[in-house]
Image 1: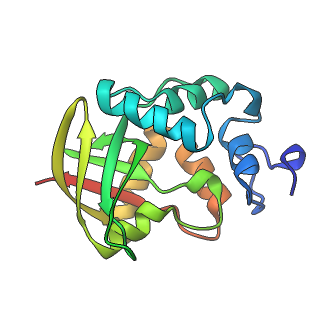
Image 2: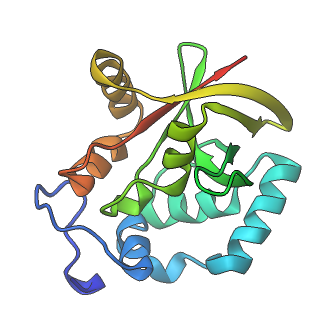
Length: 180
């Protein structure tokens, strides 16, 4: 699949992006030319700015590319499932019933993102949100809890359903981060 024949958002096809370029093309709504921060240096710059200000330039550029509002973004710190080393990543989040919820879309790719595996292996995590670092208990929602969360997130952001369709047949992980 090339970036020119990526399925449109909302399509029911099960084709999905495989390469980083295809994931960027899908996540940017086909406006990959608007994604300026990318790669190792882009992530490093975004992580620094996000830690310092609570605002993600990476999330902002994808919002602009898609013509949607900016989504608040947090830094998630997990313990590596294999290495045991601390890992971090910036993720758009939703506040639901006193918890933070993040989606494991991996740009619509065929596998769960690394941080989902880390959460499954070790639910003790930290987040930095709005300039404050907090300990959280993290878990991937399952069953009825996931169904309720999915409905709430889909109502808050239509891209939730779009990512689920793109991720199919894998189930889009919804990770609940509950402050300790």
